[in-house]
Amino acid sequence: MKTIGSGYLALASALMIGAGALAQAEGKTADEVSHKAFEEKLAYCKTCHGVSGQGFHGAFPMPRLAGQQPEYIENQLKAFIDRRRTNPVMGNVAHVLNPEMVKKLSESFNKLDPAPLGGAPKALAAAGKTIYENGVESANVPPCASCHGPEGKGDGQFPRLAGQLNDYVIRKLTNWEKERGQKPANPDSSAIMQPIAHNLTQQQIAEVAAYVSYLK
Image 1 (cartoon, rainbow, N blue to C red):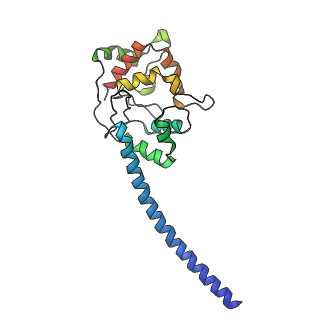
Image 2 (cartoon, helix red, strand yellow):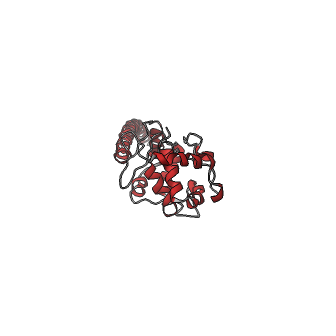
Image 3 (cartoon, helix red, strand yellow):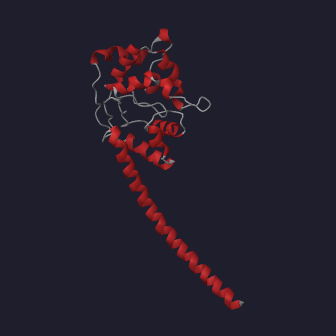
């Protein structure tokens, strides 16, 4: 029994040492795969959002993510994952992301700073500036700057609007109720925008969208 016990302890010790070495090797491999997976996912995101995250004009405009507040990106990706925000493409894209990937992608896009793509009617920007800075009192619309900042850079859960594509802003504000807050019991953090988007006219939306698209 003594001999068997000694042999068992020796075997157990050897297995523990081997397991430790394997865990270290697997940990290193996991880190390398994780980095590779991140780079691949980042490249995948850029196929729609632009190589510098600058966005893309088109029939279905893709939003600028460059310089966006990380907390806002995280919140919106989680909203897509939870189906609190609907989009036929992003719902499936976000659903496979784990929390670490969401965090890394959010931080990566925040660090990008390309020039705005522009393209909005400049004649609308002046009126948009007035709405952005002063709101529309008659429609109970507060100044956009009160949440998004005087330069449109955003803050935490409030998104950056500076440099955002005007056609994307128009589309989102126009369709707000059809895309956001799809689970009223568990609302998206941007639920505060619902009454604001609802009270803006199409002309006012176009004006604000034009103004913010030229902010840097």
